[in-house]
Structure formats: C-alpha cells, structure tokens
Length: 526
Image 1 (cartoon, rainbow, N blue to C red):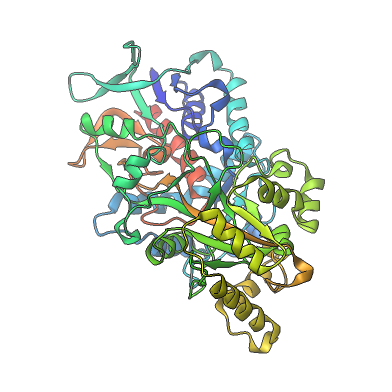
Image 2 (cartoon, rainbow, N blue to C red):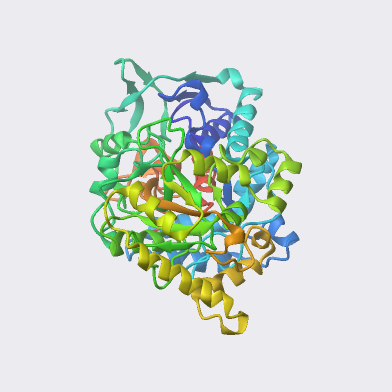
C-alpha cells in the first residue's frame, strides 16, 4: 500500500515517519529545495503546548486536562456548529503530553526544563499556568530529529522523496474517492491514499486580506510576511474543487509585534519579536494605549487594538538600552543561536547578562529600530523614519514622563496596569531574570533610548481543510472523502480549526505532530 504525502514540512515529515513505522510505502512530494525540508518549522522557535508534562511537574506546576481545556475553550470562542474543532481541541489537550511530547522524546528531542508562560490573557483569561515547552535546539532540532529518524529507518527504501515537484491537482478514482495527484509537469502519481500537508494560506496575502477577520477592521495596506511562501492556499482550492470542505479561513493567528527582517530572504519578510515588556506601546501619534497593551499577554488583543485604534495600523514600542538588553527577543531559530546550537554556557550567559549583541544587530540593521540619547532626538528620528506626520513629539514625551513618575512614587502608590503585570512576570522564575526590575524609560543611566516600529505580520492559518478525528477530509455534507487526508496547518491543525479564533501558543508545531501521527495510524488501520 502506497501513500502520497504532499508537503515536506513538519506535519508531512511526521506523517511520513509514522507511515514507515506502520509498514506503508510513501511518496513524499514538495516543491521546496532540499535545504527547505521542514518548512517554517525549521525557522521556528520550537515551542510546544503540553499539559501535565514532566517539566511542569518538576517545576511544581499543577496542570490538568480540565484546566487546560477550559482555558482553550474560553480563548477559542467556538461557534455553535464547531463540533469537530471542539472534539479536536479536546483530543489534543488530553493527549499532547504523550502523543506529542512523549513521542518526540522517543526520537531524541529534548525540552528546556523551565516551562515558559505565553498568552496569559489580558485579564488572566489565557493560560492559567505555564505550558510553553521550548525545544532544546529550536524548531531546527525538531525537524532534524524527525528527518534523521526517517533517514535511518529500517524501511527507508520504502520512501521515495520528490522535491522541486509541485502538485497541481488531486485525482479522483471514479467511484468517489481519491487515488493520486498530478504534478506541474503533467505527470501523475497513483496511490491508495493522499495526505495534504501543504501548510496554510498565510503565504498568500491576497487570501489573508480577503479573509481578514471583521473584528479587526479593514485589512492593513501593509502586512509583513511571516509564513512560508509556499503556503499559498492552492491545495485548499483544489480540495474545494473535488468536493472537500474548507472552513474558518478568517480565523488567523497574525502578529502585532513584527518588524522588517534586516536580511530579508523573501518579499516583505518579517520577524516576530518578543518585545520588551517594560517598554511602552504607543500609537503612531505618540499616545500610549490605554488600557496598556502588552503583546506577550494576548497577541490577538494587541492586534485588535493596533488595527482598530490607529489609522496607520502600526505601533511604537519605546524603551531603552537596559530594558532591551534584558527583555528583547525574537521568536525563531536564526536569532537564538545559543538555543539552536544547544550551547548551554552561552544560553545561561545570555540569561544573566542579557543580549547586547542582539540589540546592537537590530538597532544597526533593522529599519524599524531607531535610537537616540534623548527623547527629543528620538522622536525626531521616529518621525523621519515613517514620514507620515502622525507623531506628536510633545505628547509622547508627556506619556513617558507620566509612566516614569508613577514608578518613582514607589510600590505602594503604583497605579498602572502595566506595572502590575511586570510584577506578575517577575513572580514566575521563568520570567524573573528576563524582566527588568521596574525600570524607568527616560533614565539617563539606562540609555540610549530605543523605539521599535511594530507592524502586523501574517503567520498562521487557524482554519483550513475540515477533517474528522481520523484526519479524513470531509465534504460539506459531513461525509469523508475516501483516500484523502489532511494534517497540520492545512487542516487548521485539526478539524479545520481546533484553535477557534485564538491560540494559546505552542499549539502549532504540536498540532502538526499530533495530526501527522493520527493520520498515519488511521491510514494503517484502513
């Protein structure tokens, strides 16, 4: 029995490995270059959402399916007809520790012992406890581990890899099922099953703008690209053509805290920052967002505020050298070499001393960073960098002074929600050393000042090809299409959208692993 897997991202690789484990022959097809195998996962930070994990237990974190699923459902805001997304979410939360984390450990993947706490929510309505398990070696180590397991597999000869080959059509078998694909060169591949693992639609900004969520207002004119450029939605359209159901494409996980890549490798190439939490997020006018916006607490809320409260649909993050050195980070493998290269001494040194090299790299090379010794000089450079005339320099200076004066009054008189959140950050050991101790912005001893222009960036598709719990592609009538499966982001990470409207982070790579394993198991059972 031969299975065609379309897409050599992490979901496709996991599916391929598990199909080999189940005794199936596999043809893996992707239009990528050999160096691009693994897709966007190769560039990713490598976080995994898991529940009641060994790392949580060792840190004294009490977690459970009930608590995690309650968090997930509240953030997801599932609709009344979202039966399959709900079912997929429950399965992922219930089984992620063993089916994702346990399986990855079995092929050599390691996780950092301190669990990170992402997406707490604006009012504590996100992750109730830390669940973001960082892969030691970033997403690159994850991809390498799966690929190495494939390469040394005793049935490696049962795998045919076809790279630089683009699938343009899914072929029907004449009796309602699927039995192959057609490539761009008009050749055809035949098999007993086809698995779509071709990613989402985030690489096609036309689709992103067309499906832009209504609660975020009109789609921004300028959107950075954070998805893989092969994630163009072409196979979503092909699945629709042959009778499959594609749902919830307006559910997207785009970011509000991106900048232009200093060394772009593709058009509009953006980078998702982990912005300094002790910096002030300001509107293009220089007015501070009130209530304060901190992207790391609720990404969707930050994007909603940016898009609905600013005509220009961008924001400024104002901080200083001391804050940036301690708190600035980038979500991805490229700018985390100590983790990517598994260098524990360098990683620990970065925790203790901060990341001055990273800050220098961005202030010198990224067009969205400006720096100056004083606020008047900083605002002049900010205005020059955008050229849109939006910035009121005096307003920005007043906002910074107001915040700094609040800090100076002392702990008993702090009446600022951002300061309260900083205190909460510093109470968790995973954040204490990476969060400044209530640092004023215009402190001359902490300079120079830094302003970062944050922009929206397209990233993940939370909707996609609808699948049942065996990853079979469903028709609009709710019946499976024989021989056709979908996994990973192509399937909205399961069921056409197991996240609902918003995500708790770490659930994307985990969803790719989970669906890949379940699809292979279902195909083997069939």
